[in-house]
Image (cartoon, rainbow, N blue to C red):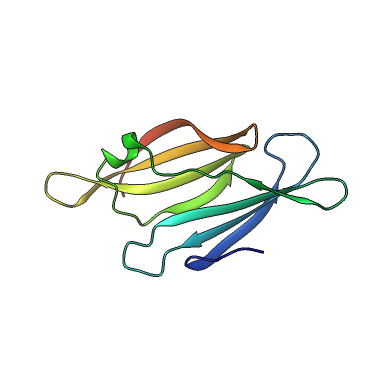
Length: 119
């Protein structure tokens, strides 16, 4: 149960913290032109009781990359990945930023990021 903000674009299960309790991740995209991505996540214990997982917010480092939305959020190599375009001085997408999040103590934390060539 919870309040939904935006459109559900994906959902998946995982065990990112490897504690044998499954997690459910629901990926949302804002319904406005920004198309900002967000995650709602829960971990379920052996009795089926859900515990909310704290999800990421947009860090200062990402904001300095001239963040303008258009996120894609998915799972890769036991991490949650959020990929979004970074704009250059000509106001055009110049690269992609991939931010990798790990589940640590019931919180999705930024563990690394990388820039990729924009195609």
